[in-house]
Image 1 (tube, rainbow, N blue to C red):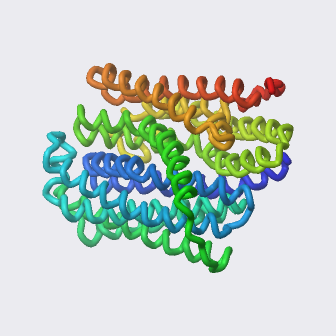
Image 2 (image 1 turned 180 degrees about the vertical axis):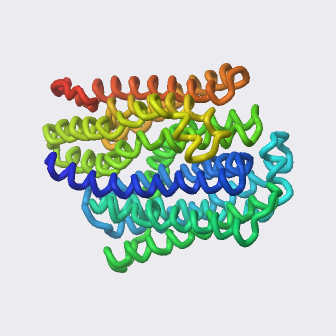
Length: 440
């Protein structure tokens, strides 16, 4: 079991490392070519895209992952689920575009002011990006359910960031200027083109893998059950996304876009500490659902412990590197103006390392049908995160945002670990405590 996990984790993690490196290079290119202001506005919009994609990309897709994992094939039920999800993706993208249009024209932040001159073009491109992101997320979930995690993420981890990096560089060479409002459409066009191409490639891959088959029409009761389950999963995942981005969103209301750009750089470097955790989590969902369905609790417990230990091994090096040479790394990559991102990156990376040590408690709870419990606990931690951001950001800026991120991460993961231990009897952490016997 451990050998299989390591083999699959290495392929998935290797692809994610390469993809994350390309994403960091995108931020470096934007910072070097377009400036910190452009990086700040771009990062703010990408954060909003991630939140807008939650209902389908996290809620509906997780439900699709469970459905495919249980039967290990893309059957008629899963195909019907995916078809309905595609229609929902169009609706949510249109709703997000309408809200964004109103926000740009009525908000008073510096980021909204920067977007207003190019609002129509920017929102149109972001609408297209959001639509493709949601479709790609459902395709990735289906392929993970088929136990093809590395192939599932190929378009998003390699193709998309490569195209985005090329678009950013070529766009600057062909159309770049010294005006922020003129440069933003270049960045958003590069983002949209990369999303469209990767979505098309991903769809070709899954079609070749599974072939074409008819989906069935779900009856009203089944559709109602899908919506209820997806709503709970989306609610939980949405709160997770908000927890991950609320610091940047609140930061954007208090500081200039350049400061948001520094924080984006800090987040991207810090996220390298979580690449192993995220890659392993892609394996965890499928395995937890499989072992839960078969009643193999011993394999489930061992898998959870192995995953946590592998995740921690990949997370530990980055905080140590940032502690020793953080300022030098940021100056080398992004420029001397970004040296101030080193301490926030260290704090955020420490939080990600703690998450790795706790393991995949949230995934275990969700795969065993505890999404409502996860949603409530995540909401409680989100409230804590927002309060900390409001208290710390006005006084300490990006350092305050990083402290809020770290505190919320530690609190949330500790709570999830306790709940997973009490509800499932499993210890998901690196400690691998003996499985508790739960009352019948």
